[in-house]
Length: 314
Image (cartoon, rainbow, N blue to C red; front, side, top):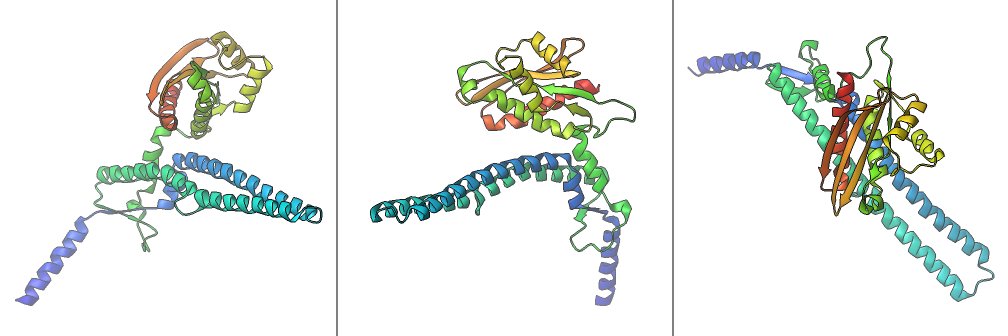
């Protein structure tokens, strides 16, 4: 009787395994080919490089003080030499504390990496769940987790990558189509708080960062060129009118302008961003948004930028 029950249970488990559809995914490919990863990586590298530069400046100051102390040790009094050494020790302690706060465990670098990766991983998990449901998979395994063979029919990597990159639109233009040229102006700052917070430059920087994901579809006039052209004409970001913007963009052979205005009251930031056709000299679309903190600007500007670009793609 026990033997019979065992055979029945084995047969049931075998049947259940056959009915369970198992898929596989190459997580490394997903991270590499998901366009948001490249944007996050660039932001992270810029963040790290800023602190590396600051660390290098502190280290150079310490080395200069040491060299100065060594060169003057024969002419300095004992009291002066000790003061100089105390200064070196204090700066060295500050340097080591800086390294710990920035590059150490739970430091700013680690926090920045976590902040950038968390939303990406959530989107990847959501995309995997969506594809699993669409394709009727009950289980999705990662290829590197001890999987020695997987049929290509069960590999959902391409499907997940395509799902993730839908928000970026086509990565390349159709054959024969010429890239449109876009320039992003600094935003007009509408009140003193916006000026003090340098929101004109911040908004322009964030939009340029978001535009990197669309470099396959558009030619983007670099930030330095547009800012230098504004200076060359003796203009300020807060006094450029529409006609001047069209004139500058036309001189740079642009098809479209992205420009806007921004204000700040306490921690709240309000902005309007517009897309303009240079040849027709007309506004094609505008988006108005508010954020409660400056740090949230990137996300909202990124979303508004995609909406503007969809107008061009239609």
